[in-house]
Image 1 (cartoon, rainbow over the protein chains, first blue to last red):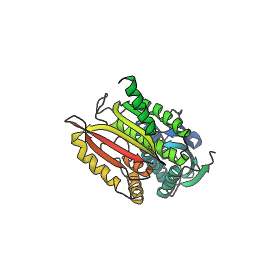
Image 2 (image 1 turned 180 degrees about the horizontal axis):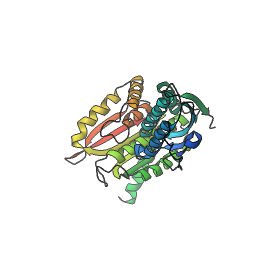
Image 3 (image 1 turned 90 degrees about the vertical axis):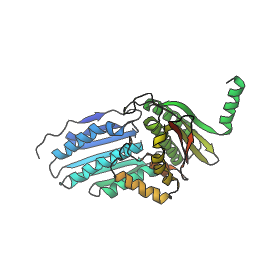
Length: 135
Length: 184
């Protein structure tokens, strides 16, 4: 494929939204912080659209790494995130390798279980469960 | 209210072990400020970290539900961002458990639809709630939902006993007060 990849995306964290650092040019994507914006679909729209355009621009054989380190996300963010990984799963079918690093507090069962849910639903992603000790 | 009545009011708050109570307008910026207050209260409590996280999550879901759906709105109904709507939320302790209560008026016409949606959650087992949660995660967002259709299920998932729902008259012919109680 020859379409041009989108520009890198950097959104700084706010009190209710995470830091999004999607370096498409380096194939390194990262989401970190808390996520409970009023309108999650609107907040993540730009990220979703650029990510889909980016994945569409990649040739087979490329490895994309995505690091997710969210300490809290509300129900509507959960829904958006779940949908986002569908795009990565589809990219895997075209020969792109996706590594998902799922960082969470070792004691946070909810986030650990959501990671397991992603792993289950999107088996083509190389999933790394990365609990950290916050104490 | 005079000084004595206010003292009575504050002593009731103490007796009932109320950690947080707010009545008024809910917007996203008000919610994030309240969320910070709730988090500080929980940090100094002896509640286990997992319980604190569930209380925090339930608080946000309840508060955002008011911002999205309360009938008493200062912003136009169709406005999707920077909404400002009225309701109340309360967090308290009852022995080893915490409880969260919230209330907001809803249109009389929406009562039946909402009842059909929430009442089954009050009778489901933990496994049934988990299964429904997993199914809803994979479904398209339902029409009319401003979240992802996962709000009530998230509350049910975080609760340690079944959610309780109540609809009560609120002195208006066009509205009914809708209450949710979650125990954690």
